[in-house]
Structure formats: structure tokens, C-alpha cells
Image (cartoon, rainbow, N blue to C red; front, side, top):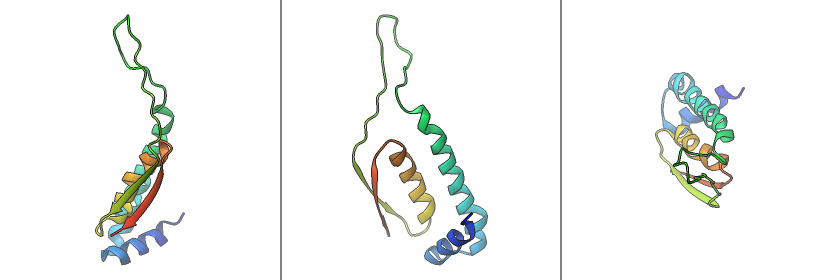
Length: 98
């Protein structure tokens, strides 16, 4: 819905052609967010394979606040790669663009 706006902002900030951001960076970032959103329901209370006399359970707990510094050349993509998993597991984010 806001791809053009995000593409223009990304092009201005990174100094890239707007076609590069509209055709590559923004659509790829959206697909990463969708992939990470799909994983949310699969991260909690999993039972991995274990010996018959043992039960292993994966329980993930939020760490708290995560700090992220994004680079100048791919700011949207790098932020998405980092805040998707952090937010999906219950953490909060502080993002500092470079």
C-alpha cells in the first residue's frame, strides 16, 4: 500500500535509483516480513525429536530490549531482517539508522 512512499524514502536516504528500491529492496522487505510473520506460530512450545525416555521442549522467552544499528546502504532491508524475529518473539526494539 505504501510501497512508493517507502521506495522514495529509501532511495533518498541510500542514494540509490528509485527503480532499484521499488523493484528490489521494498518487495524483498515485504516478503521477509511475510515469511517472519508466518513463523510466529511455529516458534513456541515445539517438541524436538529426543530419545524415548526423555522429553525435550523448546521454550523461547523474550530477552527484553534489542538495539539495532542499520547500515546506510540497505536501511529498510537490514531493519526488517532484525526487527521481524525480535518482535515475533516478544522483544522490543530500538533502531538507530546510521
